[in-house]
Length: 413
Ligand SMILES: [Zn+2]
Image 1: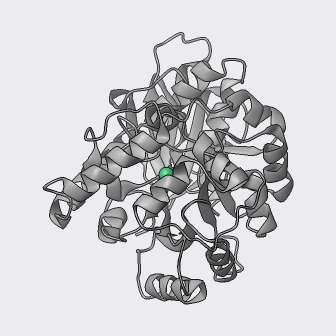
Image 2: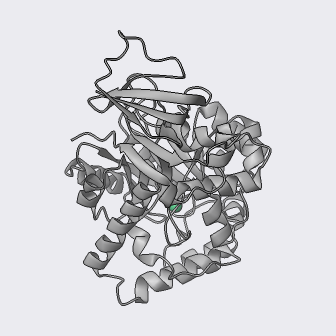
Image 3: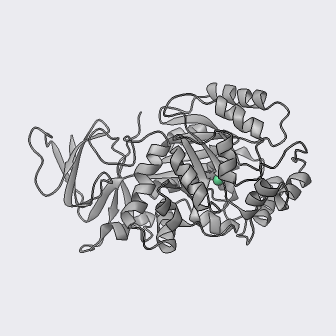
């Protein structure tokens, strides 16, 4: 049974501990503490490993990414407007020589997974349309949830579409460390009937989580409020417009609330345009807001109101989004972006968002994102300069992968 010692322990479950230690057995944490040595009945010290000047902490939780889009890295330039960015991305996905080269996509996904792991991410919420590369997920050493995304703004048979998607994921096995669930894409790409069908196709368990992109761009807000604007034009251009659709004439979060979509097992991604009332609504339903600030800047929807998110009391988790809209999948860089946007939010809260809150949102609270007896031993060590006065501040300063190493993976065999 190994016992790891380090100059700092950041368990998330409590404040940082100077000269901390954590003991594990069979892939789980059994005990942890500070300067006082562990009691003999608490742990049997068979192997003490002193890791020196590092912060021991739970692996990070990236609550929103799209690994299947990793091959788009560097191919879509940042845009000042979401519709322009979407247009560029769709053009590349249609016309690039590698657009339908599955082995090329798999290679990109495998290196993206390796990059996530190298930068300390141990659990992820990954959106997938194609469901390619489930074997790569399982081989990656990460754990997570695959959100099989369903799109249909003008679907003739929404119940049939939801049932077919359900059947598809029921017939697949992602492995011991990954689960597959269904998720609608966004208010502008999923009809209200399909939202309801997907809601009804969900299971009752805590792990039956789902996610949706919401309140990301001003154009989405306009479409939901008025039934018109640039999104309508795009949907008409690509032949996806539904003439029978009636604008709900409200805010996007409120719209999905009318469809009884929000609960404690839903992840609302982006919320850049969300008003305080919408944030209050998400909080009252127990939903988790997932923020991806670097992607938001990249696609031209503006900076997320990080301070308002925290002031509202809604649970905030963190995601990178895909390599089509961010330069890397290092969640520490996302934390640095959040810190820049809202320096008054204590780093401890940002760190909790990137660990325990994300794990809870993905239905794995108490298992990941926290170091406490019984939790999975998904533990990373981040090298820290000796004498660093505030390690939490240090951890939101933009940690690069060279500073991260894995102590234990916490994954099941
Ligand atoms: Zn996304």
